[in-house]
Image (cartoon, rainbow, N blue to C red; front, top):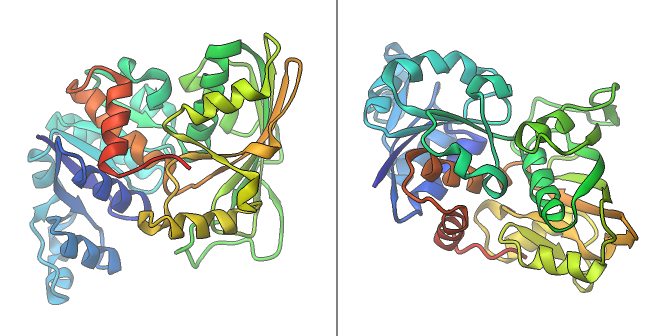
Length: 339
């Protein structure tokens, strides 16, 4: 069994912990919190040992009936791999501790590429992650872009990608962020960080991206235009998406034309927390004119990187050599079939 620690049991950490716990070849040795919260109670209910960075703060946890198993350093000593799911920038601060203990560590997309020196997407560079001590799973938007770009590139070759990210303002549980009544350019300058981030995984892809933030909490929407090197066919592109284990087609017959309806669909499917681990591509939006392909895709910011973290764990310890097999194992354990 691969022993996994989760440093930061919040929006991403709790999802990764559940996904890891569902895998037949992995176990959770502990999760960490900096302060008591409802998520700490969830960890207790799940049976995950709870660790804290500062043992001087043990009393507030235990006063509330939250037993503390020990320090984060003690948690790392029990682990083969730690998934750092702390807020952006904190992972960089944690890296010296991981170096000291010798534990393998996975960082999230909120950290710069240089923190790990290697950025990961299961679909694109799984084998290159094998044996590494540090890996960064790219952000939710970058993951969604990499999946479809890599698929089209393998089939047709890509001359250029242009994409506009319409981003949610905050996660559903966040109460301190806005905007409430504004569309915010993020950033005003072009490109946004998403294009260069895609190139940390697919360095040969010419890509330009723009981004804005809108007053919603669930999912991002991408408007993507791809210049292929060969003429494309819509029927073939639909076939490629259907055959991909982590891309789903939102069919016109569903009547879904918004992220709100996608969320409701995920809940009706019985997905944990209504999570959509796949990139959700609107089938009717796919337009092909010779070498020009355009489409919309929706990305669930809390979820699509969860399955990527699980695959990164297997790649780093070298327990599964084939990326397709790891993807199959991860999806099967979560009872995940793309929409």
